[in-house]
Image (cartoon, rainbow, N blue to C red; front, side):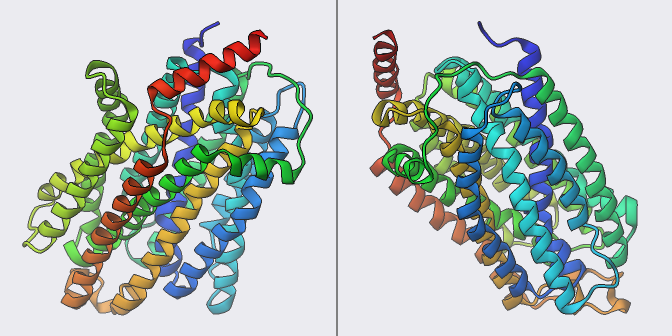
Length: 469
């Protein structure tokens, strides 16, 4: 039985809420603690990276826990709901640091809340994506739902990226104290929306029954994952691609505040993100289906097109940054290439990973969707941690923070308070490092990935024969 429209809508709505929460943390937690609260940039970088290393142990274990879960509501929905509620609570706490804290106390608060946020996000994210192979047919239905969910996730990310600074200033006002208050209440709003959207998903989605298998041990699960060479290939490509994306997303806020400048820099930042968010969503919903269905491009060919597009975008951004940049519209040119590529790549990497579930079942005799998708959660967070660490080191070297500007200078253009060498360094880090990462991703993917359309049909035919036997 094919998926109903209500089921598709409910699943997509969950992706909107899920990625609203993720984008608020991934793009603004460094800015919140480092620029607003004054936590040392290097300390924040270490916290964000250590949290991701911790996830190396936490995420696969959570995948195993999900795989071993058997309830009347299924194996995925209970953890999806539990993880959502706890993650929403931690999100609010993280962006509501007590004013009495400073120094080491503030560093400890950032460390504890951010690690807890990662743990609870894993509890929700793994079962969410693991549901795809469990209640869809392989092929077009799975690919279609993955595209829809990734597009919806892009909507959630774009909404937070577009609205955050405008709403933060509306709720709290100008200056560090105003932004601190604004982030607190904005995080609460996002947390509530998140819980409501996932609740709708849990009510309307039921995974199909699967073949009951003996629950594997931890060692067996890791062995099965390592033996799935195609899953590992996709995982490494995701790390490299997302590192490029998150380095830019972490630094673009500082770029507008301290380089592009202007008294109302956040208006230009919001306009740029509005354009970029629209392009990213359209690329998921229109460009990918157009390339895939109308032009009949293979997913692998689309992947290479996207990498080329992103490299063009980063190179043009670097060139434009050395002009006067008098109008934010000129930044739409590199923004188009980068955001369009990122939107399609989000869909592609999930499709690639979902297909490795079938490949793993054929090769290893196990259908380990929870473990494989736990790796997606881990590698995306690992990439954000590495990117944040690189960004924080850059901020420390370039001395980019609000503390460097006196209270009397608050009404003056922030970019006038930053040395030209610092602005140049910022531009280089947010463009050249992502380009290098994308080139490495292409080299690795081209060398290792074999699951083209013909190979997928071969895998599915062989699985069908086994099930018939």
